[in-house]
Length: 364
Ligand SMILES: Cc1cc2nc3c(=O)[nH]c(=O)nc-3n(C[C@H](O)[C@H](O)[C@H](O)COP(=O)(O)O)c2cc1C
View 1 (tube, rainbow, N blue to C red):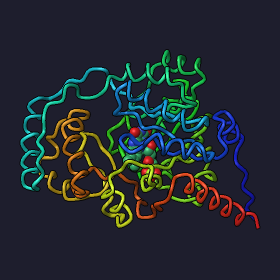
View 2 (cartoon, rainbow, N blue to C red; view 1 turned 90 degrees about the horizontal axis):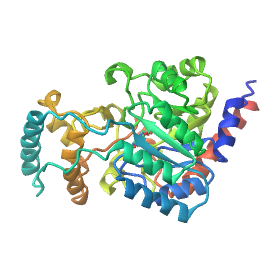
View 3 (cartoon, protein in one colour; view 1 turned 135 degrees about the vertical axis):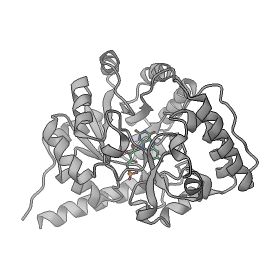
């Protein structure tokens, strides 16, 4: 008989956050809404606002909306980026030609334009985060500095850093993070990788979890391909203090993913869930659709993140409005086809029932 008990780190992590379930709804920039976050948090898990693309005022507005809907703990997710970027303007011009030609061929009345700014300024977003004072902050793409860690802790904001390798997990632990969100290769959306080439940091969650748990002594959150309560328990047995699910929540009516994208998720096949750079200039996991295939020639010459992301954003908006999932960045994890479209609070209930049933089945 195998009698599993959650670790002491698991219990203290859940207690510190003030949540009932060791379940985090991943911050998903562009897809999370205050309704989604509040529904998840209201159901006892940790809802997260993906604020990476939001200007500070929108962050504060969305945070206030969450607060109006629930008084339960929630998180805000940000991308750690420099305030200014060196952008390769020759690559930008070439990319615009390629993208505009594609939009013309596909009959979409939208063309690229140079944005006023390539991305929101991280330091302004960080100030808004401090002002919003969520229970936790989840960072990806890089490390914040020690003064920033201190600032968050002074405000009792739990610091969670995303890592895709043991070296990155160690870097966050040494920086003073309270926990690490360990992103396996299965995970949907952008790779959080910041110390390595993204192609070298594609480690499966079942390999990465025990390695990271052995290497650091802060709680580790498991992310990547987890779609049900059995997966949550499996991650816990390998040492995770919580599970972070993104794709599973994309199908909820409260998620703002385009309808065409939601429909394509359930029909996905795993060998067409691939790593894509041609939407944003940064490696991300999603569906290999018409856009991805059309952009393959010359993909290595496309500008880097966030320039390409800013160029394609208006095109993706128009494609979504036109119901053209095949031209959208349909981010998802490798088990996307297991998505269950249902209200988020109900999904939390189903996940926790499955988790408890899986635990019981281990102890009989
Ligand atoms: C549509 C989408 C958007 C995402 N955006 C973010 C984000 O803004 N910040 C972040 O830390 N992680 C983001 N992620 C990654 C998640 O935090 C998490 O690692 C991933 O969803 C786990 O894999 P799964 O999708 O298979 O559950 C995103 C994932 C998806 C699917």
